[in-house]
Length: 255
Image 1: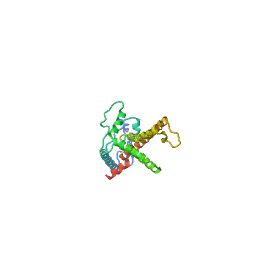
Image 2: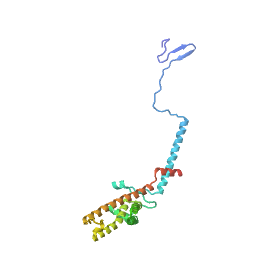
Image 3: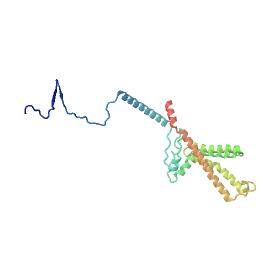
Image 4: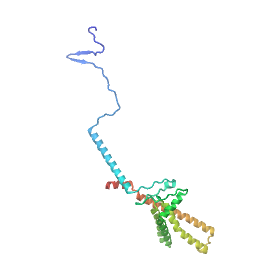
């Protein structure tokens, strides 16, 4: 090695008085997108407290949901067509099961047979409402009683839908037909004996075609009223049986 010369791997040394400065190569630290690993103790404590609070709320909601499912039996999910999805059946009354549990018919006319089976299982709902509808129609002799009788008739059909919770519109229609049939029988007897008694004095009495058309129109109208009133009774029953989110929150606070 020649004297007075250092190897190239060594850094030059510069003498500045008594202190000696050494020039070293600077290597920058690699950049990263990761957030800092450390956080303040206050942030960690608040995060843990928030996690514990959410866990307690989730546990309370789970307990409330389990108790509500135990108190009320869930309604049977409708698997029918568009009509049943548009007008879903109301949930069963408390303490009562599915009225179709003992229905085992699987033939081609299942819906028709199921309707008859439901009506047979709960005849008082539609028969009593039909009788009440007929009695309310008999008291409509003046303007005041006409209004009262109409209200009673609509309430009777809505009650049929309320108690016929599985198919409320079916019970409403059946109740209206039960109350309308005696009127048809009475009008038919009057038409066959004296057609002029069906119209005002001096008016032309109807013939057989006009009488049949009138009976058909009124039957459709009464069935439509029974459908609407019965459906509304079932809808009201379903809304009262299903607690709203506000009621569920109030119930959770009371617990």
